[in-house]
Image (cartoon, rainbow, N blue to C red; front, side, top):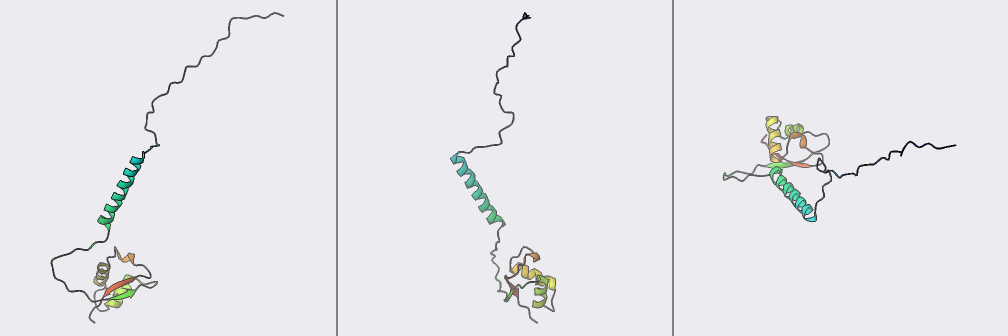
Length: 126
């Protein structure tokens, strides 16, 4: 038996890989210790500013006022601000009484009433 060769078999040559620059920034960002301290400080300052701006506040004026006579009411399960206002001022305008209670207690809304809390309620002449 004889062997016939037709030439050398072609060898596959691979091109070397070239590292390409990323087209978009990498999602992983590494901060130095100084960068972490700067980000933490910035976050604390931002939270402090928000607390001052959005927190409860009172306003001082130059007008003389008389303190309003109030009583304390414990909020029981099922109580609404409307019911408390109606009991405090049965012959008056209930809507105005609700507004007075909200303003007196610095409540954001009538639905902010929480069971178990004690609220100040104005005393009305009967």
